[in-house]
Every structure is written in structure tokens, then in C-alpha cells.
Amino acid sequence: MMIRRLGPIYLSGLMFLAVGLLASWPGAAGAAEGVAPDGRLRLGIVSPRPTKMIRIMQPLAEYLAKHLATSGIRKGEAVATPSVGSMVSYLRTGKVDVYIDSPFPSVVVAELAGSKILLRRWKGGRPDYHTVFLARRDSGISSLEELRGKMIAFEDPGSTSAYFLPKAVLLRRGLTLAVKKDFNEAVAPGEVGYIFGGDETNILIWTIREKVHVTTVSNDDWENLQENMKKELKVVARTEPVPRHLVSVRGDLPPALQAEIRRVLVGMEHSEEGRRVLKHVQKTDRFDEFPQGAEAQLRPVRDLIKYVRKEVGAL
Image (cartoon, rainbow, N blue to C red; front, side):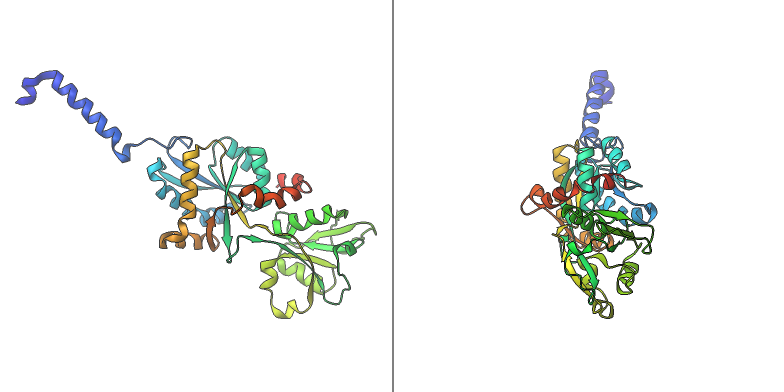
């Protein structure tokens, strides 16, 4: 046979050619630079309900992996951490590559872990939201300065729109806030007492029933509030708008892969598959770039975060 006649030199050449072909074959490509050796891209969220949030976010992780295959990504995995501190650790050690959260935690994590904020998330037709301060219509309260000696109800200690943002605004105005065990605890004349209601319904009912003087909700919640409750309340003040949610990437992720992640997420709204995944992720409309750049859009958050940084970092 021809191979036998040509001998070992010919066989060596064939082996060299075969190795070259295998190395160039798409399925044999190595993992993307900067991610796990197995080519896994990890999408991180902070949540006290990890099972639920992983179920919500896993389709997005898989979508990213599918559309980043040419960049060496082989699999997508949603990862939930119980705290902001643990997310900082995961980003620093490469256990999370992409991170999605509300603006206050995202900015604190970027400061501590060196993550880079890339995109914003739209929901309900808007890229941002703000806090609305509400009081009973007949309360006589018309400004935030009148809250001294009174009680305010926040929703929960992990909420941007219903805690961090309004609290930071009050502190910036020079008001002193003091947490209380319940709405029966006394509030000193020079302070603003506050308690947590756990959910939007509780804090609104407490305000209507005069258990507290003021409460805070997002503008979305206010606009969608039942009319029979809405007519009992009035808007005392509003905060400036802040981005609803932010997409960050690990700071040491290769720039080329960062650019590809940005491209894939921004392009999701343009395909049926992408829109289906977006809807699954808590009815997301789309992801997009910051029109004036991330720094300009995040300036209101950075200006306020100094008042609540310690609390955000302790989440």
C-alpha cells in the first residue's frame, strides 16, 4: 500500500495535519480567556431567595452562553449570593463574570470589587425610577422638613427605591433618622423615626390609618396603586430618578469579551428568542447603553451613596 511504502515520514506528516485540523475545529476551541477553564460564564445576583432567582436568571445565562460560543463560552450558569459582601468576593475571585443588580449595590460592588458597569436594564417602558414620599391627603404635611418628630415607614432594608434612595435624600437634607421597633415607639422632636413594613401594602395601610405619617414607594407602585387607596394619599416629594438596574462585568474580564457581552445583551430585543428570555427575566424590556455615558448617569447615585454606603455594603 502507498502508506506502507512511504513509511514513518509520511505517517508523521498525517498526524501533524490531523492535530492541526482538530485544533482549528470550532468545537475543539479552548475556553474563553478570563473565564473558568471549563468555558462557563457565570451570571451573578444577590438574593435572599436563591432558588427562585436562579430559576428566573438561568435562561439569561444560557442565552449569553449560546450567543458567546464563538468567544469560547460553552455554558452559562446563574449564581446567587446571599449578600453584597459575598458578591464582592465572587467577582474578585472569578466566581462571577456578569452581575445584575439595582444601582446602590452595583456602585458599592464596583468600588470594592473593581467591577465595570456596562449597561442599564429597562422595565415597564422605562430605564429608571424614583421614590415618591406619600402622606395622608389631610395630614397637613407638605415638605420633607416637616417630618421632624414624625414617623416614616420604609418597605424593607434591601430596597433601593423604598429605602436607600429616600433615606439618603433625607440625610442629605440634614434630617436625623432613628430606627424604631414599631410605630408605637416615641420619636424625639429633632429626629425622624422610621420602621420597616415588609411590603408595599403594609406601609400604605399604616399611612392611611395614621400609624405612620409618611411612607415611600417607587413611582411605578404609586402609578399602579388602586384608586380607592390613591385618593386617600398625596405626594409630598419625589427623589431624582436613578437607573432601575445595572449590568456589570468582572473588572479583569478581557475587553473583547466585555464588548461581546455588551453586544449580545443589547441585541436581545431584536430577536424573538431574545424577547422571550427578556420577558422571563422579570418582564425586562431591554438592555441598552447609557446615552450620556455611565458616569454621567450614575452621578446622582454616587452623590447619595455616601449617606448609606455602610448599610448597602452590609447587605
